[in-house]
Length: 493
Image (cartoon, rainbow, N blue to C red; front, side, top):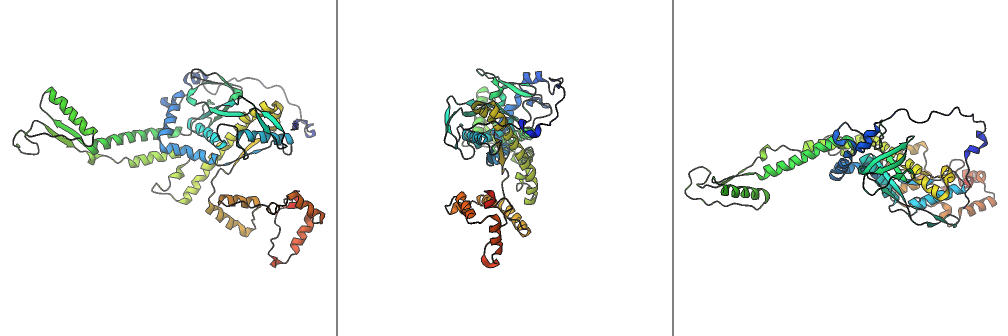
């Protein structure tokens, strides 16, 4: 494999670039947050003391594990990114070294159809990172290298020994004690758990969701605004459960003789009535009834039922659930469960949601390039190659496509002369679950290059072929060539 490092710094077009001025002042004079407080608390302050420092991370994890709405909120944000199309592009087009490095990165991380050398697939790995960042604020992972080199073959079949990245091991936010920065960049991360060592910058993959104005290392969790609704919802569910248990079953009242032994037996009877659906008591009468409902006995059991006074918790639970979904711009998902709303309203509300998802996906893609891909290229191909040839990670098709909406759009654009290229048509067929259309040369089993060469030997250049097509009668059933200039079969060659 030929590794030719080419930099635009030596391009003659930059020869007349003016020289810079004086060296700027170094260091920082101010501060964006109280670093001593963050170091002491394991995180920055919050307006709520319960969510200050590292105390908030176990609460966020409880929210995600116990509340179905919070769980679905995280899934709404992460699943479109996992199911999106992730592709690698060479940093420098038509450069053999850039293409080879792109292929090596794809081989390690399972992109461009490769199986990958990591413990998780690309979709699972990127999904875990996004869920962690949305849930807690930061997604901190340690780059773990394989202990042995692996053989990799480039497009020419040449073998190379590479050191693959085996895992992006998560480092939970609740375990982080200190994130040390220099000139705004993370240089070291320490954990509070015993037996751990400081993680240097070259082994860190660090993504922060919604970094706030204080510049704290943990940023701001997406589900932080849903905390108040979650806490009220949790308290209401507990209170409703206690209420149904108490009032639907009734409250047992046991009348007993006035002595310690009878009091102990009465308490045991009351507990059995409350704890067991088959519990029963039997009080034999000692004489004729004295009137009323109470028998002539020293013992008597009465069940007081208060179910008529139990408030319905459903309206409040529905309200708190709606408040939780608004924290993630997913309130459109509640349409159909509320008293108002329509599909048209949902289509309007879903646009900002997918804009937010696309922004998160693009940010994660950028950090994967800067922190992970660049480290892989540096170790295996050198620092110069990493600066010039680290491939671009592109994410597309984040938004789910509605067949009905796309069909209406095509019907509207067709009378205006809008046509589909073969790539566009293949995308639509894929969306409908149909097979892809092979190009004419591939379908016939003829190599594309051989067909182009034969047409040129016969004198069929682009202009001649276009003239022949235009001269055909309208009833021939042959569509006119509407491919833009420069994109046809002969022009592409």
